[in-house]
Amino acid sequence: MIKVFFVGILCLLINFASGQDLKIELTDLNYYSDFEKKAFESYAAQNPDYFALLLAPDETVTADQYTRWKTSFEKELGSLKLEVEAKKKNDKKVKFLYEKVHSKFLAKYEIINLFSQVFKDGIYNCVSATGLYSLVFDYYTIPYAIQERPTHVYLVAYPDNERVKIETTTPIGGYTVFDQTFKQNYVKKLADIKLISAVEYQTKSVDELFDKFFFNNESIDIKKLVGLQYLNAGLYYLD
Image (cartoon, rainbow, N blue to C red; front, side, top):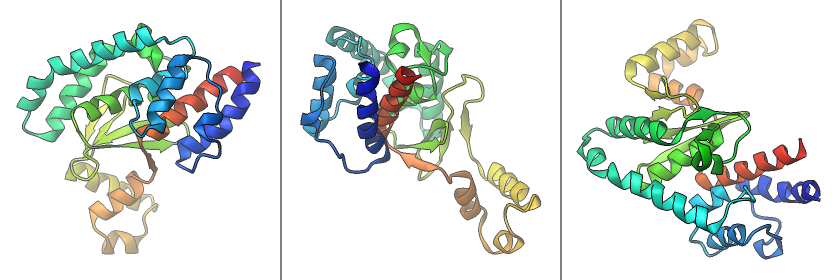
């Protein structure tokens, strides 16, 4: 029965993830818990609780767990506020938060995973960890973009300026600042292997070429990341 349900819900959430208009009204959905229903109602009321929406694909999550986890999460972020504010440079703020959050919440990477497991036992994958850091950056009003690849997602903090890449799946080497030297070497390597033509290399700036070839994946927001959580959940059930 639950597999049949997910065949239908996948059609809805694929649209939800891709940003297209919903083909089914939220009032048409059947929910497997009051918690999930309230999470979707927050979205319908244009006051989305993304912490709840990221948890909602797990049918075992209760309202009590949600309250306890969210309270603990926000308390931890609040305890870091003075240290974050003391960082004068944006990249230093992001690096500090990246390391503290990874150390506190993320214990083990597993490819099959839902967001709720981050708070149950510290297990995460690229989607759930990206959701976690999205909430962290929202809390501190740090601008970010979520880059989506066919089998992977990651974040870029301050996407219009410093462009700090956050690779959530590893605590080692997961934080990258793209300085001018990195950009020049990257563009030159592409030119050397002829992925960039000689004309492009000579007539366009390093920044233009770097933006075109390095950041050429689709950017999504946290709403679409919720859709990816549901898509993953559906695939786990169907497997």
